[in-house]
Image 1: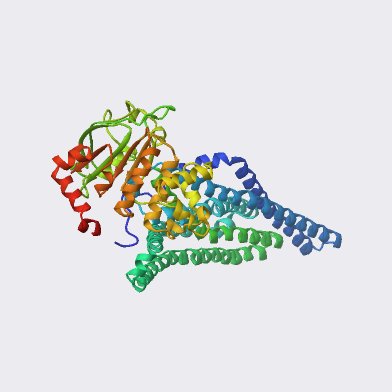
Image 2: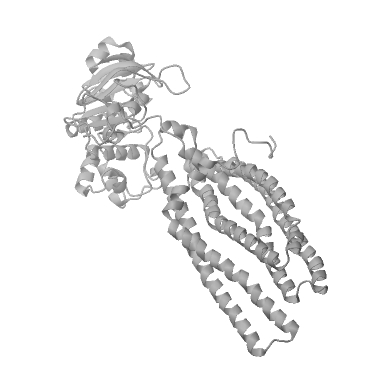
Length: 593
């Protein structure tokens, strides 16, 4: 598709996107008013300076100039210059400071909104895309809201005021001077449309580059293990070349706008030099009027030359603001419909009543008509890959939406309870263990920052990882690196388990969170947790059956349904799948496999 092809369903400037900034402009209205007032004062002082120069030139031309008079004119010019310097500092501090505050608040608003979105959103949008929004796009909005705003206001005020002073000197000469300007306005409008489309493509390419770099660094061990350094470097180089090509296309538009603006401005100067010079020779205007007119035209030249730059800033800002606004318009599928605070469930009783769940855009249920009651105790969940175990855990952890009257906690429909209250009663250990690049102690105490070291060590012992932590050089103060890279998979999982235990919540869900340890260790961990979990509901998903043999109840899932349920002895005797898996996994061959 051509760079200049029309964008379907889009507008160059979205009023809805611009409305996103209104609360910030209202919040910092006093700062903006003060800054723009200082800017207007600068413009007024600059516009007054040619009047002083005109008087001095006319006095020199008429022979009435005196040394004290010229010194007085020089003093006035110095005074105006000092006032311009002070006011210029004030508007820079206030308005450019506003643009930084705008960037900060908009970033905070964006992050807060991102934290409300559910898994469906993050399955559709990459981390690189979101990182690009919080860096490049916000920077473009900041420039438009700072220098872009100032340049626009300055250009408008200076243009109108300079034209008024020029018209006061000689109206017809003013008309002649601005004859080339409509050409500049038309060409700027035409080129700005192309700028919008090309800059949007640049930002999208930056997203791709960012995501590729993040993915490469996040999987560096795998890349090295498969000796993919050269292919990754080559691919990143090709993407960088594409990014440069797209930026050059933007530069072409910028390269046309700025010189063309200068050409029009110089054409205006040429017209004034010729026709204004004739009027001066004919005595229609004085030499002082001609010098003042030329000074005002120079002031008018800057807005004309800056028009392309201002259009560039606004187009970049509008494009980026539209991209940010599209993310802010995203709504989570899981809505918090509960009104007001509610006491979180405390007994840990879970009831599912004909619960079904279908992913958007699909027809086959991921969870199909599940009904059961889970009471405090350890409940195991087994089944083939893709049988719905993890999806069921995500639903129980309140990460996916459910229909009314299908999911109850302590007898209350979860849709009538605030999300924070439900999630606050559940400690969840997902399949993919996440550790932050901080100390082990910090990672365990993530949900309870005020936890004592004794409490942290207690849960670490329950997760059978305390001794291994103490064997590290700095113990609990050992920094684990990005995503826990310094630890083994089993250590990361057990630290995540300790983190969940420390929360001391009535429901704990462990979604295959011990897969990286051997079967005997997993079984030992589950047994050691039994006393610690007294009176709590603990749901443990595992691909291995043997560690769940001591669980009070085991659920066997198949194609999103509960195919069988009961204790180990009952399932071993009555469920062929369970018996087969248990027998295989407890034989020598199964343990070695």
